[in-house]
Image (cartoon, rainbow, N blue to C red):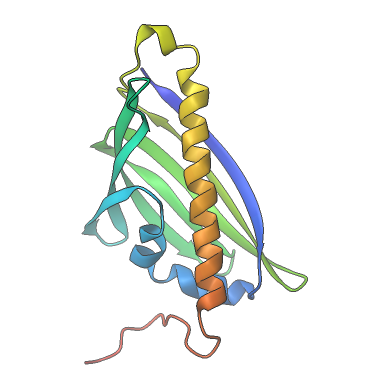
Length: 169
């Protein structure tokens, strides 16, 4: 069964838009905050394969090991981190964006994701409710991810932000 995903969220963060964008420079750490991410494989450049722990309910026999590939694009001038799905990588096609805008007392971080999960094993009796159930599970993961991102921004010392250049060692 194919299941469509579409999630949009927005939250205030107590730092400037530039500080949020600096956090995005470290893609692997940013992505690594996503709950249930089992393995992140670097495919070269800014391309990654996500392999996630089982999402769903084993009791209802609606459980799926989601994996997909994405290429990331950071556009500091637009205040955006965008990702596009890589074809033929995994069992899902997921794309989306983080957008950051200055706001009173900090910035507003907007998150949008959409996509499709393929080959989701769903018993016939649950086929009508499975899409909403799976969307709900993913929405909860996104909410946790955004809270973990906000926490990381609050904990990052103002004088020690991630750098766009690697230090020579």
